[in-house]
Length: 131
Image (cartoon, rainbow, N blue to C red; front, side):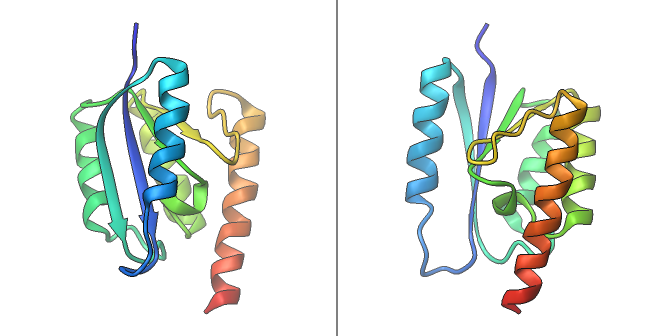
């Protein structure tokens, strides 16, 4: 059975493009036979979760409109460790699978959850250095 898959794309500024993320995620999904039902795209900092497409994606998750969330990298979803942990916990509780293409994240295992927390910490640290 094909998984209803959504993509979440994010770049930090309006002058940047999500095209490369979109292309690679679509290729990845196609190779696995996943049906992409929607694409959420934000052009704004990942510092907090107050982003239009992100909030729409969370609302759709709560309504179980999809089975799997696919992102290019963890830092595209959230730059804050707290926001990332909260978001991933909620997705898990809703029974929604999460895949981060470039981070090779598998949230169904203890080691995958540990790796996710470590990578999120580095993403938050990197953002703080940029600021």
